[in-house]
Length: 193
Ligand SMILES: C[S@@+](CC[C@H](N)C(=O)[O-])C[C@H]1O[C@@H](n2cnc3c(N)ncnc32)[C@H](O)[C@@H]1O
Image (cartoon, rainbow, N blue to C red; front, side):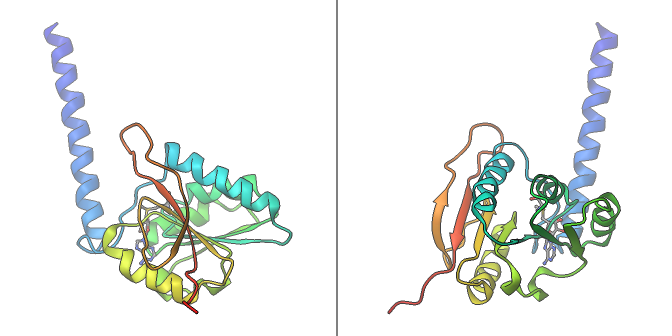
């Protein structure tokens, strides 16, 4: 019994240590909380995004360009590039280690490229669909940029973050589980007549 209790505490302390290291790392790479640190889109949110793309890309009569603005380790894009080989995927990531990992782990996908750059320096005008998983501090700047640069038919699929500058076309509704946040689908807001 005492042995089991010791194992439990050791596992607990190791997990706590990893969590603290992750938080410290996230705080630094997010430039002191100004930008989204790395956290992957998982579970219900990932399924909703894939189902939405399934629907949009199967109907598409041309090759679509899909951007993941802040693609992290690129896992979401690899899943999409594999599933939709006829379409083009672009990952924007400014963290060099994540960018290098993306390039290294995605060599076999001919329809997937990565750019090592600040998403705010990239022109969204070439995108048909923009996926993002960002933090509230980025909402103002990102929403303004998307509204300014998006083509008429471009959609933004946002995990968790709302953009009042854009026009909401669909929302997933809250999910159950530890990460209940919604996924929102937006299009460019039309200027009032
Ligand atoms: C929450 S993660 C999302 C990862 C991936 N999109 C997903 O949904 O699984 C956000 C990523 O955006 C990157 N990021 C944050 N601000 C950025 C910026 N201004 N330009 C490029 N990448 C940025 C971070 O380094 C991080 O890897």
